[in-house]
Amino acid sequence: MKVLLINGSARREGNTFIALTEAAQQLEKHGIETEIFQLGNKPVRGCIACGQCATRGLGRCAFDDDACNRIVERLNDIDALIVGSPVYYGQPNGALLAVMQRVLFSSSGALQNKPVANVAICRRGGATAAFQTMNMMFEMINTPIVTSQYWNIAYGMDPGQVSQDAEGLQTMRTLADNMAWLLKKIHADDNPEYPEREEWQPTHFIR
Image (cartoon, rainbow, N blue to C red; front, side, top):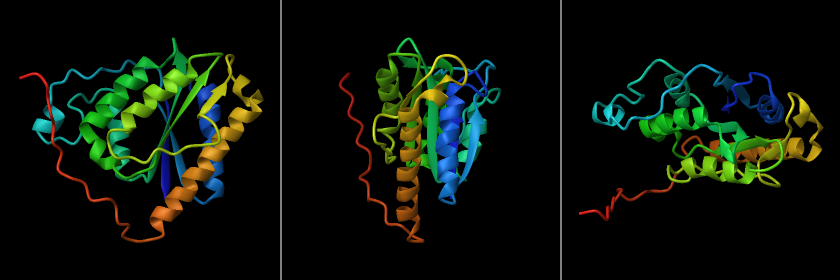
């Protein structure tokens, strides 16, 4: 089993990375492989609603010059996903949102039934709003949301400061324990029976 952790911070080894590493190390104690993907600080595109990923059946974003498709390429080979972000003005990093919206619009089918969790790191406030925003992406694509003992939040401003948040790091470990437990339950059966789902009935109110 493998879990992909996306570091949505421009800082390669800042507080978001430390929190994700805490979760990754706990997952590895359960025998689960992990990979931390660095979003980095290079420019990323927002979705322009061109629809080519769907209409041309690409299974990936039509734009191939940033991190989006490098994440898409990993989705079929993972069993779960954790996404972490710093908090900017009570919201996740805008670059992370831009990338994840394109990832999910083009390739959400690769994540169906796979456990997902989000992590928000802040100096003082706004983390719950950012955390809720991140969860909303996954609450509409049939992914189980993994919880912890508290919201998946940790605190720190200067690089490395989150290491002093004992409860925050414990929350990351508990999240990892819960994700490992769920993954093992799912994979206990070689052919798990996922829920049968009705055909989508889109209902638009503008006629």
